[in-house]
Length: 325
Length: 249
Image (cartoon, rainbow over all chains, first blue to last red; front, side, top):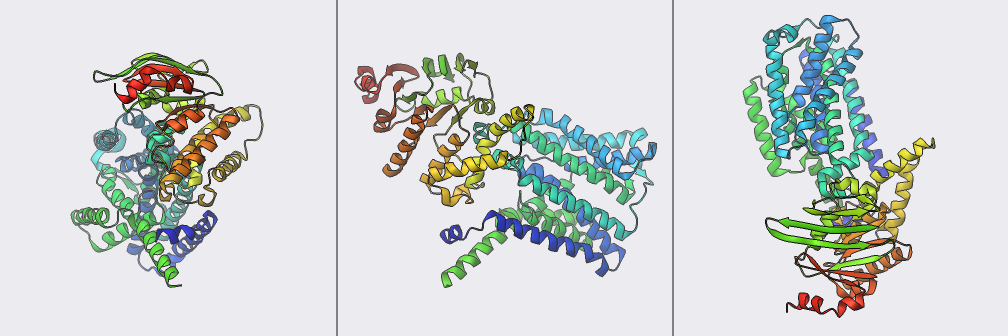
C-alpha cells in the first residue's frame, strides 16, 4: 500500500492547485449562501460559525504549527473585544483603527505572558496560559470603572444587518485563512513544524525555538484580538463571560477533530461543531458534554483528525484501484 | 579550528568526562573512539551546547562555545548528526534540507541587505543547493516524500545531508555507520572522502575500526571519560593502553 502511494505521490504544485481550487469553491459557496438561507437565526448561526472558523485557524498557529498548548485564546479574543469597546466609549474612531489597536493590545499581552511562560515546560506553559485566562476574567469583572464589570459594556454600534455581519466575518475568515496558509508554507512555517517534530534537531539546524514560539504565540493572539474587535461590534455588548476558559474546550475539539496543524479539516470541524450544537441544543451544559465525548472519540478513533482520515481513505482507494488495474 | 581544553562533566557523581583535551585543525579528519560509555557522545553534546561542561572550555575559531545555545553554535558553522537517526518525519526530504539551511541563509541575507544587494532568490539558491545535495546522496527521486517513509539507510543518508547542506566549517558525525549495511558504508565513506578532498573538517565518533583507520588523519581514544591515547591511526592501533581498554585487560 505504501509503495503504490510513493510511486503516485502528487507533486507539490498539484496539491497547491487542488487547494486553491477547493478554496475558490468553498468561498463561492459561502458567498452565495445568504441568498438561499431564510431567517435571521440561521444566518446568525452561520456567522457564529465563521467566528469559530477564524478563531480556530488562529489557535492552530500556536497549537497546530508550533505545538504549544495555549489555553489563552478566548482571553485574547476578549482583550480585543474589550479594547474596541473601551476605545468606543472614549473616542470615535473607525472599526479598522479599533481592530488595529486590538491587535496591538492582544500582541503585547501575549508577549508579556510569553516571556515567563515559555521558560517553563510544556505542561506548565498550558497551566500558565489557563491561569492567565482566569486572571484576566477576574480583572475585567472587577475593574468596574474601566470595563463595567459584570454589567458589561453595551451599546456598541452594530456591524449592520444580519447579511452584512455575515459578509464581514466571511471576509475576515478568508483573509485569516489565507494568511495562516501562507505562514504554513513559508520558511517560518517550516521552522514551526521542525520545532514541533523535534526541538533538539531544530536547534542543531540553527533554529532558535524560543524566538519562533514567541512569534507563533503573539501572531495567534494578534489574530484573535483583531477578531475580538469585530466580535464586540457583532454582539454590540462585551461581557467577562466572552473570555470564558470553556471556549478552549471547543477550540481543542475542533483542532483535534479537524486535524491538528491542518487546514480544511479544521475549517470543516469548526463549522460543524458550532453550527450543529447551536441550532439543535440550547443547553450549554449538554453542549459541553457533546464536545467532551467528541474529543474522546476522535482521539481514539482518528488520531490524525478528519483531514488525516480523508487522506487515509483516499490513499486506500487509490491503491485499491491501482491493484485492480 | 576547534580546541577542547580541560573539559570535565559529571552525572550524579559519575565522571563522564575527565579533563579531556585535544584540538582539531582545519581540513583534518579526527576520529573519536573508545568503548561504550567512554564519554564520546557526552563530549559531542558539550561541544554543540546540548550539555554544558562542569569545567573547561571549547573554542571554535577562537570563540568560546561553552554557555552558547545549540542553535547559536549551529549558526557559527558547526553541524552535527545524532547517534540515533533523527529527522523531521512529517516534513518532506526537501523541507528537511531547507530547514537545516534556512537560518544560516538568514544570517547571510542580513549581510547582503547591508551591502544593499537584492535578497531575492535566496530560497531558490537554498533549494538549488539542496537539490544538488539530494542527488549526490542518491535521494533525488524522493524530494517530496515525507522523511518518515524513507528506509533506514535513506534516513541515515538524509541526516548526514542535513548536516552538510548548511556548509558547516566543522562537521560532527556521531556514528555515521552504526546499523548501516556494508554497501551504504562504502557510499558514506566515499562521500566523506570527497568532502575531505574539498577541505572539509571532521570530528567523528565511530566504532567501525576499518572506517576509522581508512579515513582518519588522527584518532583520539577515550576510556572512562579520560583521553588515553591520541595519534595517527597506526600509532593508536598499536598502543598498549588502547588494546587494554578495548579488550578489557
